[in-house]
Amino acid sequence: MTRTVEFGIFMPVASNGFLFSKHAPHYHPTFDQHRRIALLAEKIGIDYLFWMGKWKGFGGETGFWEQSLEPMTLVSGIAAVTTRIRLLATINPLLFHPTVAAKMITTIHEVSNGRFGINVVTGNTLDEVEQMGVVPEGYSEYRYGYADEWMEVLYRLWSEQQVSFDGRFFHLSNCVSDPKPRQDSAPSHRERRNLG
Amino acid sequence: MSAGTSDEGLNFAARHSELIFIGNRPQLIAKVKQLAAEAGRSIKVSTNLFIVARKTDAEAESEYALIQEGVDMDALNNVRSSFNRDNRASTPARTAYLREPAPVGFGMGAPMVGSPATVARKIVRLIVDLGFDGVQFTFVDYVRDLDMFSRNVAPILSQMLSAEGIAVNLNRTLGEVPRHAEEVGQQI
Image (cartoon, rainbow over the protein chains, first blue to last red):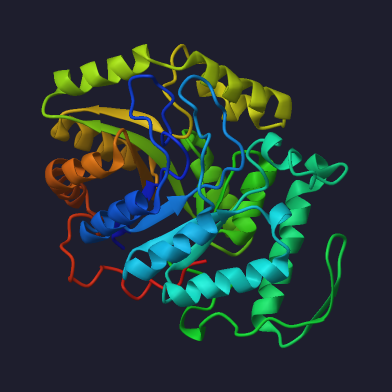
């Protein structure tokens, strides 16, 4: 079987992209810049665009990442102006209840006509979530357990009419989430993809 | 998709992700694919690459040297101390490159510096020798450099990969049906 390789662009969602040099361009992220990158990337056959999420910058003389746009809401706008390229945005389970996330993802999936996917992170550095006061006691010990349970709630909301769930972190009673993601592209962790 | 290099991160990806980003640690490719196979799944592995493609090798190298010369040490130290504070099991591996003498940024990926042909050759070598399934590009000036990349690097790169028996969508013109159109829309 022919081997395939995909190309993506790691989008400059925070100030100065990924460079902290006085001799590199200094800029803050804008929708117009992301739209231009997205349209050009789509035109030349880039397969996907990928946005990290960042809630606190690192400063310095160059103001590295001092401004950032929120990737889920940004990608919704990009979804509306593109037609083919796949879109991947970062989401941190700690910051979005799975019921909210399930509907946000379904919505962007709808806007993008099934081109959307999420990048699940449990936190790049703790600073950015600690500033919000949302880090539970002992979180660093069970961050992936938390993300696992969050994913399980997502899958169930996307596949069941009503979800009652009594987990370690989440408690849902007869919780609904409609519509379900489009059936022609329903997300599922059980889906197996032939990678060639 | 997810990103991670700790055992927990790799296991999480093996259970849930179609794509994992592992940075500059190709030794993890086989490991995460094995974990995914054990979970009855398959997974693609990608990395970031920082593209500095200019007319000649010399021009690209001198631009890269200039960027290195201007490294913002305060920003670099702030990134370092933030990760050191975190002190997770994966911290030493994740921050190894931050201890190099002059990293020019954070998250930009391995530098691919040179003429269009040089850059294309470096990317091909990385894909063929190390076995990555995907590459995410970063640039100095995204709009300008992506345009230059599309004109100068993409045609050579897609040709070289084709010669290696590797199929890509890159460099196809808008309007052509993507090679894997049936897969588009199966993400998440």
